[in-house]
Amino acid sequence: MAATETTEAHSMSAAFELSGTPDRGRLDLNTPIGSTVARARWKSDSVVLDTPQGQTRHATLADMTRAVVGEELPVPAMFDWLRGRPWPAAESTPSLAPDPAGFRQLGWTVDLSRFDEARILARRDAPPAVTVQVKLDKP
Image (cartoon, rainbow, N blue to C red; front, side):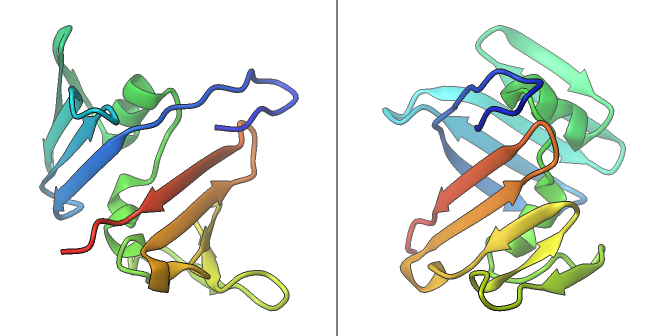
């Protein structure tokens, strides 16, 4: 993650598996060597986070991502972003040249210029700036 004028830079590298839907799903975070860092499960009315330190409950997915990675991540939108398309539940605008192919949504710029290489870059410029780089596993 990048630094801004008001926050200190920090980074996190993790493999993740996202399954289910925005309403009911699971997110597993693993270290690069495969150790589980966290497993989140959610349904419409609750989010449960399991870590080596124990189990916690969160009101929303946004609260859970703040607890795990220190920033709010748009997990519901990521189901669609990882498929190379905007999330239909929120307004989006396509990127225009000379910007890379992709779109803007929820305050994030989603760069799909390397989607054919199974790579996606999502960036939030508003402080604190956040960059999420994804390399998709091929099935």
